[in-house]
Amino acid sequence: MRKALCLISLVLACFSAVAQLSKWEFGVLLGGSNYVGDINSSFNSNEKNAQWNQFESSFDFYNTNFLGGIFARYNINSRWTINAGLNFTRIEGEDAHFNNPRNLSFHSNLNELNLMCEFNFFSYQTGSRLHRITPYLFAGIAGFYFNPKAIVNNPITLEQEEVELRPLNTEGQGMEGYPKAYSRYGFAIPFGLGMKFSLGKYVCIGLQWGFRKTFTDYLDDISTKYVDHETLVNWGGELSAEAADRTHELSGMEGYYHPHNTARGNSNTKDWYNFFGITISTKLSLGSKKCL
Image (cartoon, rainbow, N blue to C red):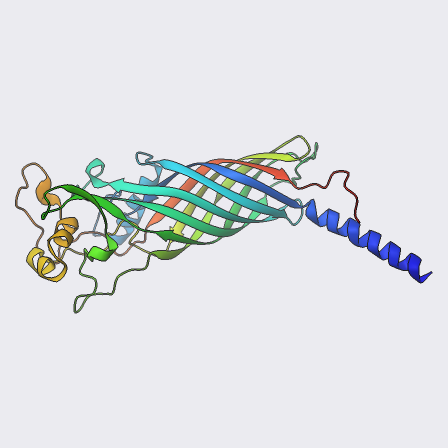
């Protein structure tokens, strides 16, 4: 009897393990990304207008870049899902294409790790004929790494070079009375919406559009005010001063540098980035494998 009970317990444990495994899906995200910040928004000294214009510019896909990612999805039930993902993309901006051109630009690879909760509007299950389609909402937390760079004219070599902007302290970081250099690591709140479609027994196809509200204003290396040109030359060197204020390169602006403490960005708003694309995932199934 004891052996029989042990065998029954083992079989039930195996069935439970199989049931849990069938709740998992693994997939990829392919699409595009863009950035919203001090470069591609219409700067306005009024905080509310600045926020609105910044959000509005997120629908301008001029500087869209490829997005690739992988994710694991655990279906708690037909309505709730936990999703963990790792995404890789590039963000960039050039204010020559927007209002208030300062001749500033940047680009940065961005790597993101996220954990999100999804809510299905309708009951959904991959492989189900009855519950095979649903719109959904998602929200969660994310951590990311970025490193803004730019192509600038090196005043020493007189050649264009790609340089990392953070070490140049373009807004006087590290000087007396100024903040320290910003971190290349940041946190974000991802949220958005999507649609899921079940194809066959194991495959799910989806569409997704999500926003990332960050807690940094330096995705683009722009946030506060210009530092006096000569002061920055003496503090950080000629390359630092050149990267900080490139307005003098514009036609008709030769030799012009912004006065000390004039607005370079809008520190009242943080930067955003957003993802959109197609998801393809497969449900984990043991098929006819036996539990040993």
